[in-house]
Length: 257
Image (tube, rainbow, N blue to C red):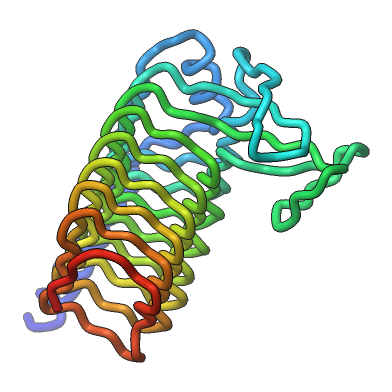
């Protein structure tokens, strides 16, 4: 009887896992790009997205003049709300890339002989409880509305260097397996990282926090660099867990530890 009960339990577990797997929809990243180009709202739950979601190659891509950079730049604009909940991204999410003149990618280098491709977001962006197995490249992106990245798992470096958050930026409860790059990021409204975990380098060097920042109970397993960061209002680090000494050299503004 005990053996039968064990077999029944295993069978029930297998059926449960199978049902959950079948409930997951799978789609190609190109389907999402097509919806954005058609100005259709993007909203997915419990989906597996395959392929590279390259937001720098939208139909509205235009060449722009950037006074701060000497390189040639092309900008795409996501003009519809994006909502992803409980989704898994198998490939990269690209809102920033650089290419040589011959089309070769050189994402870690930007020179006068490079062509820069970026994407801005004009509507609300929500990624909640998602897993990013590839790269997440949002360098130089502007988020005009609220940007929600709560309870996500970033398996590779999360690159938000130079990102401009016009409204609340929420990364609460997210797990960064590698580095979290927010160097030079501009948080014009609330920056919320409460209960997040950053396992590698947390780079907030030169970041500007214009309207309060919460790192309540955030866990920094690697180096935490806030050198030259500016807190126009209070930066709350209550209960934050620093596994190595954080660098607040030349930081401006009030902080609660």
